[in-house]
Image 1 (spheres, rainbow, N blue to C red):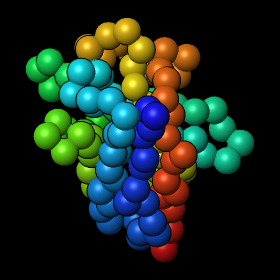
Image 2 (image 1 turned 90 degrees about the vertical axis):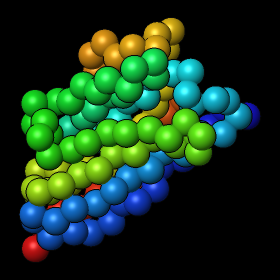
Image 3 (image 1 turned 45 degrees about the horizontal axis):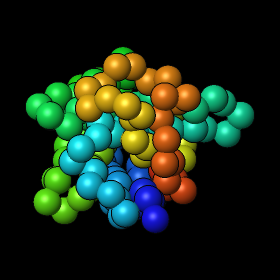
Length: 126
């Protein structure tokens, strides 16, 4: 069964850091580009980052560029999202998903992604 499971969310103060994990089962994550998305209450799901499989190149949304870093450990079948200098507007449920049909990232259209995890809550508040 193909499955992605996110973990690592929690409550953090503004300026703090959190590290999220996206663990895959049922398939080799190393063959696919993986995206991170988030969805805040009342808002649409938005792309945060994407990491390609072949060369590990990454794309980031402008709102998180310079603060978030995505990485992957194909041996552990896991992708990570390190989030630094967190802001209250980063509060959301964070999801990972597999980019359909390509090993290279090409934008953050949620309809191009599949096998969504259940999400992990990140709350940034003092």
